Image (cartoon, rainbow, N blue to C red; front, side, top):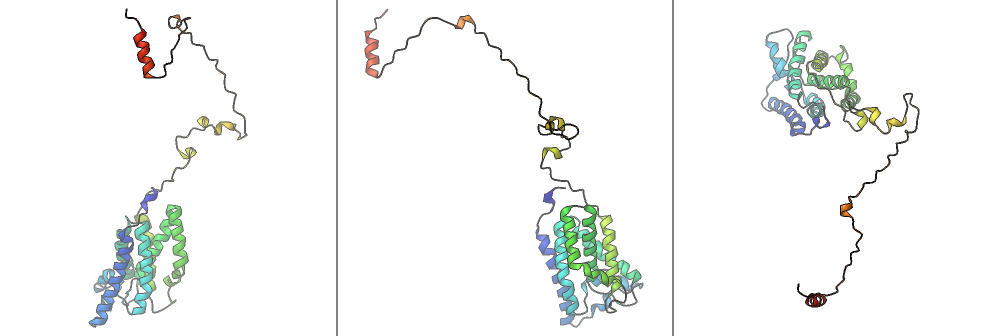
Length: 265
């Protein structure tokens, strides 16, 4: 794949901002009109709790919970839509559904809400996909994600904090890892800068490579053969021994006088 695959588009900024603003809008509705959306979260292994698979990422218990999820979502979604723009929508949608379904299967009997499971989906996908591609830009992105959010891995274990849904975090981690295999990234092609990187390169035709023998030792090029130039014979028809005399006339008056002095034949 060529370098121009990574393009800055409006989605790189627009989608993360719109998504996070929508989360704040939902929380504002809950505060402004006294709604309680917690009942729309994931309630594991219940039929009514299945609605939370779709709705739980948009519901937050308090403003601190919402704030802690907002900044990572903006950063990770922007990275996703810049480096994986063709796969971004699918990863976002299927990441929410898959992580929610796993939480519904393994979660405690309590309502699970918040977009933290989606954050774990994005962190896991970006990290492992960059490692799988072995492309230097995506590997650098993977390392950046580890530096920024590597500490989040502790919150996928139980009894670290009873107030958080470690099941949702673990589900997001599993879902992100599964998506790295479902979305195959095309092979990245190395940009060819030198002739010797081309597949049809022939070392025997290269002037520089000819200075080395088969063992890699420097050798002098063989002396080039001197080709004697053949003298071209001129046809005698075009040769003459007669001298050609040219008259030099300085001005137009001399030309007119010369013409008048000529006798007519």
